[in-house]
Image (cartoon, rainbow, N blue to C red; front, side, top):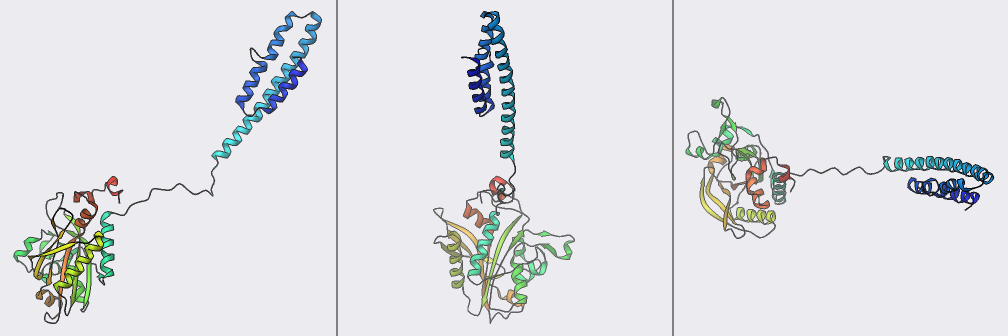
Length: 329
């Protein structure tokens, strides 16, 4: 191939190179060890002196031309490459941000909210009270006077000095007393909240846990009303029909008193709460006339409800702060 033709061909290919890799391939084809122009330069030794001068001058001019052409095209391609990289790495402030991981509600929060929602749909108001209580509301007004053997049923955290009569509440029943002191019957109220018991911890016991107390007072409130309301609550909570039964028991603030069992799956009957008809002494403590009003009260553990609903084997998991565990809810 003559030098003018080789020049035109090389110039066209250099201009058409799309990237540095293609340009390098073209460079090798012309100026590499086995390149076409390299072969021409090596063949000059076999020409006559006159032809060698003529061909040598033209070949060297072409080599200089190609080297300059390759250098210029390399600059263009590198500049384009940098531009593409800058374009791809540029921050688009209008683009939506990366989605951050969302937190999860604690299973006890989920259970408490669901329980409150169900009872509110049945006309129950929600009441709250202090976690640090005095002896009157936690015991005396609930028909548990000083030195009464029933006080041994609640392992109490007394606050120093003990003779001041302050403690961490052992149940949410004091909220019922506080509510009845300020409201006249008829009434329906629930009191969810944290309570404290001085006892050893294991898979089913903790020193603090959550309870939900319920109270309904009216002129003709009966055990039948209680049974119907509790069955409806558990039906909605577990989203399936349930069977419950009442067993005689003893609580100082109710008479008669009973434990409630529920048939849960194939595991037979499971104790789920304590309840009863409000004791007349409790009504007297808040200023109600026992002969005019009657009602029922109940207390259920929200921790146990969470363990049953979500099949949690150990109550301590609820207070562990384990994110792998909590992330399931």
